[in-house]
Every structure is written in C-alpha cells, then in structure tokens.
Amino acid sequence: MKFSVPAVVGLALAGLIATTAPSASATTTLAAPDIPLANVKAHLTQLSSIAAANGGNRAHGRAGYLASVNYVKGKLDAAGFTTTVQQFTSSGSTGYNLIADWPGGDTNSVVMSGSHLDSVTAGAGINDNGSGSAAVLETALAVSRAQLKPTKHLRFAWWGAEELGLVGSRYYVNNLPTADRAKISGYLNFDMIGSPNPGYFVYDDDPTIEQTFKSYYAGLGIPTEIETEGDGRSDHAPFKNVGIPVGGLFSGADYIKTAAQAQKWGGTSGRAFDACYHRSCDTTANIDDTALDRNSDAIAYAVWSLSGAS
Image (cartoon, rainbow, N blue to C red; front, side):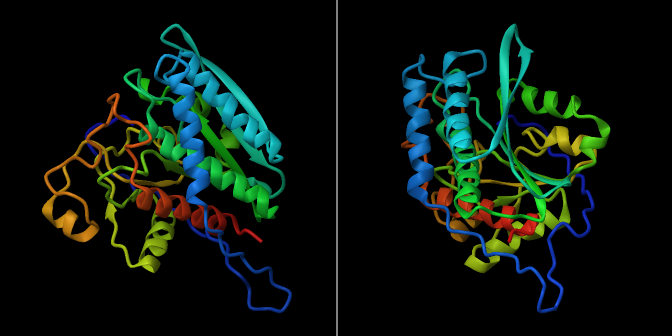
C-alpha cells in the first residue's frame, strides 16, 4: 500500500443495495456466507511459498509476481470464472492485472472488488497485500460454491505494480471506454486487512458503500473509524478519480495505534498497526487471524448485499 496526505471526497451512490419489494414473488437477497479463515490462510501460505521460491518477494517484474497471478488464475478458472490477464509495462518490466468475471447479472451494472497482488521487493508481502488478495479470492470462490445469481454483474480484480504508484489499476481504468466506466456501480478495495495490531477502518468515499461496511461491523458490536492513513494511495484512487463510487476496508499500516484505539479494539498502544510494513518480516506470522477473519466476512457481506445476490 502506498500513502499520501488524506483527501476525502464523497461520491453519491443511490440505490446500490438491492431492495426487495413486498410481494410473494419478490426475489429474496441471500445472506452472505461465512468465509472460512482456514481457506484464506491457505492462500497466504501459497503466496508465501511462491515468494520463497522466487527470490523472497512477489514484486512487479519479478518471477514471484507472475507466479502469484498464475496461482490465483488457476483457482478462478477451475471455479467457473471468465479470467483475463491484462499486460502493461512499468519500469521496463511487464506487469499483469488479473480480471475475473462471474457469469450472469446485469453487465450494465457491475459490482467490482479488487486488491493489489504485488509485494515490495523487501519481502513476501503477506499482510501487504496477500491479505486482501487472499480474502478477495476466497470470496470469489464462495460465489462459485453458492452458484450465486446476483442481480448485478460481479467482477473481481488483482492489480499489478500498486507499490510503484497504482500502475496496474490506473492502466485498467485509463483503458476502459467511458461507456464501460459508467457500468461500474461500485468498486470495493481491500489493501492490508490482517494487520497484527489491527484497527477497523472503513473508507468514507461513498455513503452507501460506507454504510454497508459500517452496518456489518455494527452487527458484531465493533466500532469502526474512517480510513485516513492511506486515503487516495491505493487502487480505489483511479476509479474514484473518474467518478466511480468506491469503498473498502483497511486494518492499518505504519501509523501508531493510540491509547483510545487500543481501548476500543485491543492490541498495543504506542505501536504501529503493522510494524512489518514494507519489511522482510511481513510473513505469514505478520497476520492477526481475528482481523483477517472479520474483514473477509465483511467483504462477502458487501458483495452479496451490493449485488442483490439470490
């Protein structure tokens, strides 16, 4: 994840959550499934093994990144998704975005969820951003297991070269025709959702998406805060910049957890949310299971709710 000075811009989104008409023939929106933590962690173990076998990282232009793309793509292909690998060039190397579409739903109204799949060169990047990548993957696989029939079309994405400045996601958005941009009713971003000293942060860019995540956490009795540490410097920014409604979750990076936050969420005050941010110690040991589990379930809740799943 890349950071800059916060810039909060609200985007209105009316009617993103499907509503059910009060009639006997109305389609009922399904409850989202529990996303198995063990499955998400199994993906993280695979990403860690990929890094170990490829020079210790999964960075843009390195063999570990392409191996990560191939791992995720293989899972999605087997689950019945239509996958596309989009190539771009950055810093003299070929980069890759992976896009996966679930068959069905209104392709004029797309709910898109994404995460960056690359790490920095310093290490395996398991929280940043194996955590978001694994949770989005397992949510997509849950869509397949449920043979979901959403009202809206579901699309999932794994971005390349985020750590070089949102290169992959910006390439995707810049190469989308204007008419196709207008078809994306919301983009949900998940970057660092298993921080070892976690907070529970929600993007406030779009009121409907924001409230979807807040409602989920309110149901667990867990307070949230508005995400400001990395606003505008993850892969939602290119979407937001062209007027696409965005939202997402974040568990904190190298900002320091306050005493008030520790009282609210547990953990240790005076320490970073992720002391291994952009370091070699961002390994499978650098994950808080509870935060990863809750955020993974929240992703599924939002995907099911916002797409009118049935």
